[in-house]
Length: 86
Image 1 (cartoon, rainbow, N blue to C red):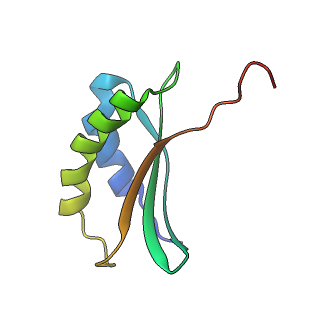
Image 2 (tube, helix red, strand yellow):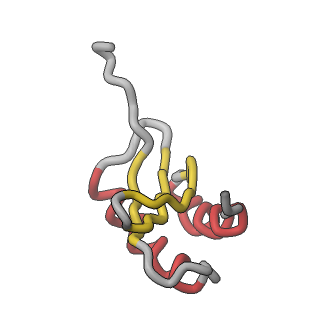
Image 3 (tube, helix red, strand yellow):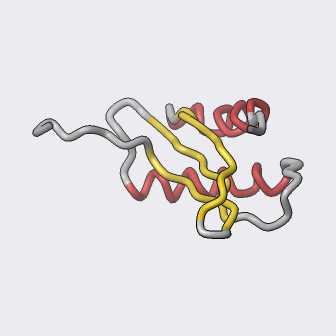
């Protein structure tokens, strides 16, 4: 498993003013596609608009980061929250 600690730190520095943290970053293969999965978290959760804004900030960071794999799909999501009904 690759170590994305430096990438995580770069992203968190960019998202710090929005109080967003990186929960995890992993590179996974699913159905013959390679995904760079970045899971974000924030106290109170993240709505779709906030994830889109964060994605616009994360994209250039990932583009400039030296990832060995050339072809992958960037997948940015929020940490799942349990509903209060569970």
